Image (spheres, rainbow, N blue to C red):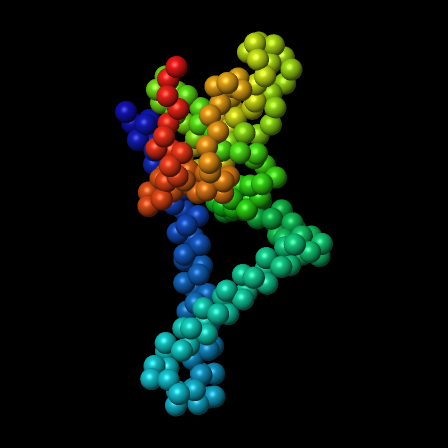
Length: 212
């Protein structure tokens, strides 16, 4: 019992810590930018055209943060930026705890952004028992040895954990036991990450495959 509580605490900490750190950093950045933008707004005399000086400063700060994120994303797509962020990532790898948080955030982000190159389609697989279906992501065709064992063509299906899709298990499933659904890979990953909370589910999930 104690072991289960400990494992649950660690799992929850790993999932919550990245979000908490991100929000904390954004708060620090916002507060710092406000100390810079507030005097600029007053100096430019913009208070004459708006009833709330602080509100205008917050709007400008939000715009600066969004622009900064876009700039970082633009640089990350260029060779020089990739080298810079690559060196930064290697430095972070040497920092205890920070490297774990940074690594988990980066893996989740890569899974959500680079989904098309990683997965082919979203499917339902009858797992872990008959009558219960798990959301899976087809990663490719199974090895020939698996085909001969299954007695039919088979595919590799990754069953992601929820709410952390970077972990899960790989199963080899015969083609006739893989049920394709009308859902994009992005929507499937979002469903896993949010654990289905607040999602407008596809009719494909409500119309589960009927038993033969």
